[in-house]
Image (cartoon, rainbow, N blue to C red; front, side, top):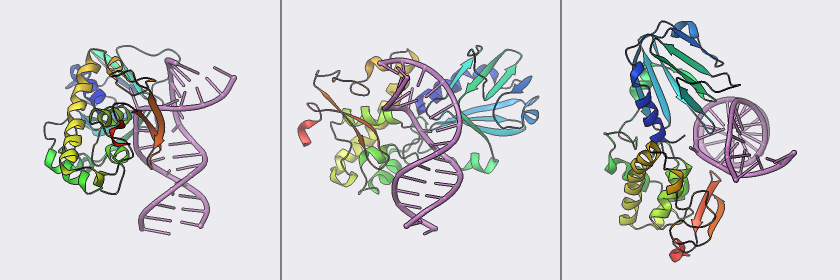
Length: 243
DNA sequence: TCCAATGTTTCGCC
DNA sequence: GGGCGAAACATTGG
């Protein structure tokens, strides 16, 4: 799950803010006793982290690759890692990693990096990006300390939008292109959010998981790239000008 | 049936 | 101590 999806989740959880937990249970190794009777004070997301702030403690939920959730609905044959029941509804989190957060850890989040935050600071991100001059753009875009919330979908679509290739090094790009790529990642995050909300995300992918380019119909090359060895999709026509 | 994949952490080894 | 690969976790669609 990528950053924009977490923002949508925080919006879905708004009805439970200032509500008291009636039942807290699930398969995660957590102190559920401490959670029941707690009042949910705030729901935040930073990158791919969901942060649940209760009066009695803070928890971080990470959905990793397969994590999901349901609001006022339960998946059949699945025990949620965490289920929070309130008077006005409930939420189930599945296949996720949950751990308590110290107050100091919450205070340490740098919101100026979060692509979905109002505090996102382009100049700061560009500076961090340029410092990785010897690394491949496919790896740096996925670096959660520079682009928290950016996942493999956004990596591929953003590189496509800029007509670059995943294995280019940051230092090979012109200064102008470095800025344009960082900007494109930020813009695509919000585009992702808008499409996801109206359930039109997949249909708008240009190359990700496509055999042919949605823009030109040309063949899409698939390869694992970078030290992260993650899937890259490249339109040989649209992105071919540098080959 | 098999495989890959919207991801991260931890562990053992060099 | 850093870097690296493997393993662990866990689910679903193609």
